[in-house]
Amino acid sequence: MPQFLDLKGKVVLLDFWTYCCINCMHVLPDLEFLEKKYREKPFTVIGVHSAKFDNEKDLEAIRNAVLRYNIAHPVVNDGDMRLWRELGINSWPTFVLVSPTGKLLAQISGEGHRKGLAYNPKKNLLYVADTENHALREINFCGLLLVLEQKAQTIREVLNSPWDVCFEPVNEIVYIAMAGQHQIWEHNTLTEITRVFSGDGYERNLNGSSSTTTSFAQPSGISLSPDLLEVYVADSESSSIRALDLKSGGSKLLAGGDPLYAENLFKFGDKDGVSSDALFQHPLGIFCGKGRQIYIADSYNHKIKKLDPISKRVVTLAGNGKAGFKDGAALSSQLSEPSGIVDAGNGRLFIADTNNNAIRYLDLDETDVVLHTLELKGVTPPSPRPKSLKRLRRRLSSDTQIIKVNGGSSAEGNLSLRISVPEGYHFSKEARSRFNVDTEPENVVTIEPADGFIDSEGHASLHFTRTATSPALGRINCKVYYCKEDEVCLYESLAFDVSFQEAAAEPQPADLTLRFAVRPKASASDPVPAFTS
Image (cartoon, rainbow, N blue to C red; front, side, top):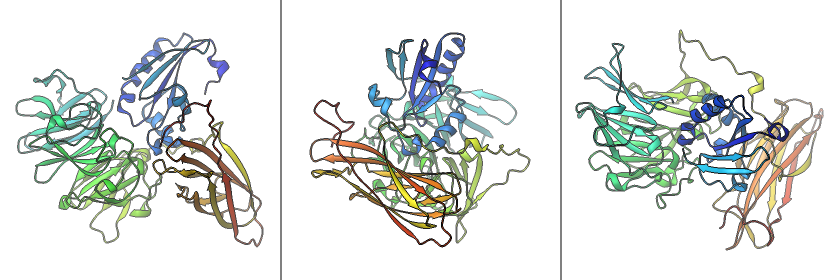
């Protein structure tokens, strides 16, 4: 990563982005063009990754995205959005141009890959959503490939990042999840007319009775219902699952998202439940299978979930919520950002496990559902990642309070978080305080759970187990959000550094309490806090 002295005397373009943002992906070729054009000039592009979703703050997830999108310039992880707030950024992507002397010159906001497939058995044709080229392509299995994006006869718009497709066989219509324009389009294979089917183009989670009173937020997955009356939509930026009526063009909420405030695209999480009580985090893949059950690749939660469209109940089928690669009992298995899903019709559900570069599958007819990895014969497997690409410890921000704790020499024990707020303050109910764990070196101490929420009393319970006798460090990173009644809400970043000594021969279990009393730093002369209650 360039240091200040490396950048002095250069024009610097800061690209504020987040890897779930389709518009951020659109500008990558433009950045690459600028980098090549001014390669011999004092010019540098630096990506500033300012995450929307919790999963996007993870260094390994960002690294995977950088590799996936072939980003060659350096990228900064602005996980706490400090640069974002200091420069007054309010949308993705935003570009900030910095002079050779470090002065801000300008700030500008706004703006592939083949993603979806659908088969037409009558004509033996395959329709492809060619995301990066903004095209719908038709392959006739005789080697001929046609580009259909110029056949939009009734509109002036062009295709913009089609992400998925499904085929309705009776009327021979291809429905297109147009992620870049936040709409659902249709391509009539008989008339060869392509047009908007539903969505007004505004990025929001609005369910209406007609196509023009409905809005989507980066729809990324679509699947046809068995009765051919609806299309189910994974609306990724609103973290919701919607049902689109093929007669009216209107939509209704099935699960997730905010049912009351259409502009709220930040209601996400990981929770089974009914309708809007269930929570997703950027779902991408969707498929309506046997018994009209809807299967969802809940990408940033690293899970596969099932939704009953009648009861609107959501349950987790596979994945323990942690990114990883682990076959076995479905609920204890691990995936890493699954993005595609399809039912083969024989009770077997296939999953595109993106960051693991693997196809996984579930046999739904089994009594005890197990996650397997499909053996791809004749295909060269991806090279194993070098150790240097393993997850690094999170770099602390400069305002983090570090509390050092003597962990002793016990082989195992309990860690009890006890965080208090001043009188007249309370822990935020809207932005929940949470923790995550780092350890080093690897395979010496395990602290579980690896992440979680701090309750309304400021408490959380963890357990450590020594897997080797050598010394180790465990760090519990805490993000604390607390509010003064009817006034302001504040943020505190904490890190408890627990130093474990060489394990004793016959140690007793330990009970360690990690205490900290937060104190507001704000005064009358300070800037306005990041958010208000």
